[in-house]
Length: 93
Image (cartoon, rainbow, N blue to C red):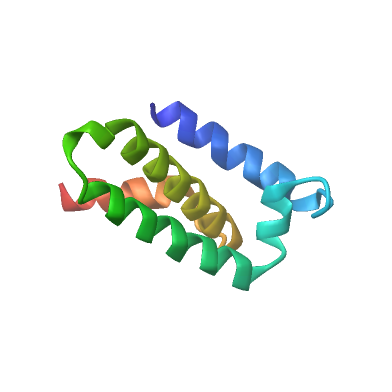
């Protein structure tokens, strides 16, 4: 599971030089306002799914994945490594 997020981080970093017209990640990396809106939107959608009955497990997982992706783009934009986030979590454990 951890490998998937590490690979996602590497893919997002690789998209830094891509054309925003050809890559959604590049579009987000080059448009802070769009990225911020998407993070807020995905967080909101996740909270809505969390309030639904247990039958919404698939949608909840999808919304969480969307939020994680956009947060990972935000981390790359802020030059914060995913390993740094894991280190913070480990320190809180």
